[in-house]
Image (cartoon, rainbow, N blue to C red):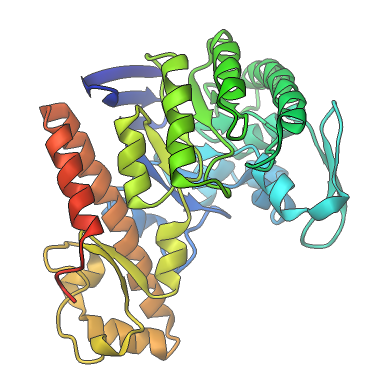
Length: 381
């Protein structure tokens, strides 16, 4: 991996990250393909047409549904899903802690839990998470971490973070060994470590400094956008990013709204992912530069305009708000598909605008204009 900063404006940065599976221009939004597919009928060809750079796939879901060993037999996610660009797989940690209920048991060796699908018993430790992600053949793997509740107190957070650090050391060793095996799909798989600590800034900073010593290829900030306020989230980003290596990519996990992304870029973040574009699109909520529209509203029944006037996505080039609303009301899959494609295009186009502004040195004025437009009343209403 090679990571080169092209330009910086204050803490905002735009970089080029070269991987074995292609080049990633940052800041970048990774489209979330939970089970190696975007919900809403969007395929790999659609994603390429809207200039998607990175596909994010879910380790836990692929493990419990199809099985990572089976995907390895099919040549890994790239061949399985017909995706020849970079892929990031999460560790499965967030799903283990968010989907498996109170029956899980956290031990030093890992987590014992039951599948949310059939109740079968599963164990996942650092080595297991790394093995699954190696089988999937992703470009970037995430270290297994414990995901504590955002508002947990110090007595819970502190030992949790210390365990996450010990797990990270084990992930590094396991990743190294797996990359050296003769049958490994991607022998240059990149590993990112994850900063945790809830909203306790002292713990966050201490953990950032500790994991920075491990000289990883990238670093993520986890455990945010899970219940804390936006102000608390921005405060933690402000505290953490200056204590991570400046010459490594920074990934803010699970965030977020367009304004969240803009504010985090301004604080030095490179990578983002969130289910909002696809989830909201499936419910008829579409993003524009002047805010979000709900196409189920009656006022769009006879609206001949596209979702956004100057948008070049498949939906806006070919269909009216009225027709897409009709599809949604009729529960036609095409309506959801068009809304999801539009939202993903909007997010990818937003990131391109951000990258250009940083590289030209116009970031401050562009940032202020983007936020101003999103916050004001939608002019297209």
